[in-house]
Length: 290
Image (tube, rainbow, N blue to C red):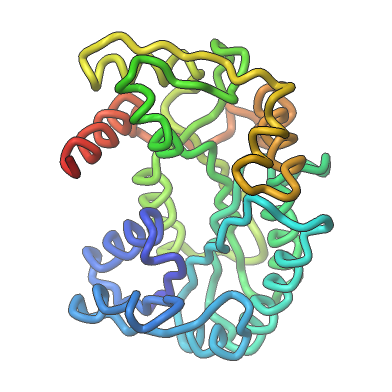
């Protein structure tokens, strides 16, 4: 049996479906019983737990062949990442209590970078997991192609406003389908100690590539337009952020090139899903809701 956190999201749900199709039993780890109702009819165990509750997490992880671990995103962390550190301590306590046979943690490109930025969340969790007594794999995924979901409506109007700059600067991106596929593969493998798997799509993409992909999906011209760097802080604060600097520095890292894979593009694992396919799906999803 595999315990899957984040199962109500796109990645966790896809991981679970891969494993169910392979004949594995699944324990869906959810924040409330209501969120688990979709999975129980599929034959899944349902465990209720949050990343801060080490007792409930230990119960969820107990007697499992492996755990797919995701931590809730925190785009506006307090200085010093206290929430991440608190959750990491609880997760470590749960792992040592339950002793699952392995952990696959969905980390991120740039998790090794010590420069202060938003991705330090994953760096701190990786550091905690390295101190545990069970085998762990850090799946460092590239920028999610599905982040472009935020741009569908503006693309329909012909312009996407991009924080990725210069507009022709390509960065590593990956589809959630490829993340789920590799996660399922890792959970079926055996290793000792810790390992790092860095994952990106079949090629790197820029903001201009996103606009071109939307042009194909929508059948009309779409162009990318840079959001001026000197407007970011006021814009993020107007959206309710209290501490926007980590997010700003993360974007700077992608734009300036100091956020990339630790072992380089040549050694990263490559997914097969292309950006154009993801954008087509995002557009179709929006059309289906209208």
